[in-house]
Each structure stands twice: as C-alpha cells, then as structure tokens.
Length: 317
Image (cartoon, rainbow, N blue to C red):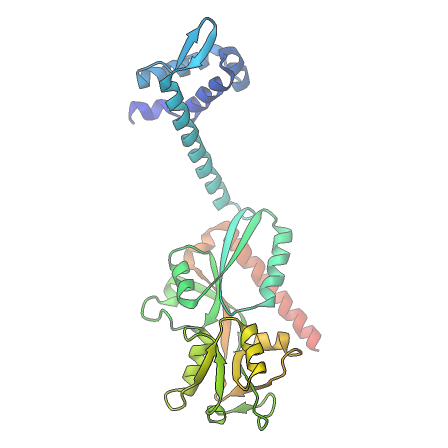
C-alpha cells in the first residue's frame, strides 16, 4: 500500500479539521478524546507526507498556511464522500430506511396502489417513496438501466419481446386483471354486452396515442379490415371520456377506471369479442430482492393485496 494511503486516513483528516476549528492543540485534543502529543504526531505525519507545513505560528497563535488551506478543502470533500458512501451502504442494508422509486405506465390509475402506499408510509416513515409516470418504452428503459426500483404496467407486453426475455431478467406479480371497455353513443347496443368489432366499424374515436398499450389492443381487435378513424387523441383518460361525451365520438378505457367513475359516465359501456384480459402487474429486476427495503415493500404489498382481495370478497358476499 502506498505511503500516502496509510497516512491520509479518515481519522487523520478528521483530526486535522478539528484542529482548524479550534486552532489550539490542547482544546482539539480534548474534543477528540486523545492526548495532545498524539494529535501533534498525526499533524506532523501529514506535513511530512505533503512536504510542507500545514500550520504556521505567530507567538502562541496558530494559522493555516496556503498548503493547509488547500488540504482543508480536499479533506472536507473526501470526508463528505466517505460519509455519503457509508450512508448509502447502511441504507442498502436496512429494510426500513432509504428511497424506493416506482415507475407507472401513464394511463394506469390504481386505487389499490394509492391505498397501499399511504398505509406503507405510515408504518415505515423513514422510507421515501417516489412515483413517476412513463410511456411504455420509457418505462422499460428505466427498468433496464436500474433508474427505478419497481414498475406498474400492463402485461402481457410485446414492447421488448425481441430485446429481453421477461422470464429470465425480471420478476413480476399480478396486482389485478383488467380489460377494455368501449364507451359508445350507439343506441342499439346494450350496456354490458359483448359485440364483434364490426358493430363499431363505422364509428369515429377519441383514443389514446398510438404507442399506448390500450391503443395497441384496439388496433389488434380492428386489424387491417376495420381501420379505426381517430380524429382526436389524448393521453389523459379523463379527457378521453369528457371529449367523447361532448361529441358523437366513441372511446375506450380500462374497466378498472370505468368501475371507479361509472356514476359520472353517460356513455354506454360494451365489450368486444373475443374478450381479452390483461393484468396490471408489478415488475422488477431479479436482483432487486437482494435490497432489504425492496424485499420489505414487496412482502408488505403482497400481504396488503391478499387482505384487500379477502375484504373485497367479504363485501361482495
């Protein structure tokens, strides 16, 4: 090990900075809990290594030399870095501290997640939760590059089928099943019934942008034979519904949103044949479970979902 690495320890730099604070060997030694000769020896070692004095003296009064001022700046930076690394390591190894970043697909609104995060934050106040919203490709990019810890998205998703094998690189768990609900102005369609796409082939649509998951599913329904006529598109589900209601346009949303807002929606809800379920799922990289706070939130979320589903079944009965 090089000589400088042995002497420029965190301890010696701490002693050096403490002497600067007091500019008095006796006081600094008392604060540090060491003898004055021990402190003097540490400072002299630093000066021998650098090759120039760090402190000068006028009478009994100490002052910092130019070399001392430069070392002071470097020592503060080094100790800040060391402390930051130690904090990061301690945060990594603790289940009840740190930050968890959750990425969500733009048009997913899930009451369950909001309820869970509110409950989790009360019980683990030292864990900070950051929720950010993304488009599908951007959400996968964030996951791939470890910029977020967890993702809430629709599955199955073929966005990355030629790039990554979901089974090999990721873990995922289903939060709940969902499906598309078409909201239509057509008077001859009955609420809650299922129809072939041909029953809606001549309609104009307010739709999500083409890259959105639900838009892709609708294009799969219509295929090349019945191309959708989309004069207007929005990324906001609320704007989709309000615009469709204010015009003679139809639209489509996920069933979970409809169930949460059906009292406010005036359009007729119908389903398409064949019915295609998809799931809102929690997705994360395999290695994330090695982080205690991530393992903690995953376990807590599973327990919360189990209790929530059980409560829902009891309410239905």
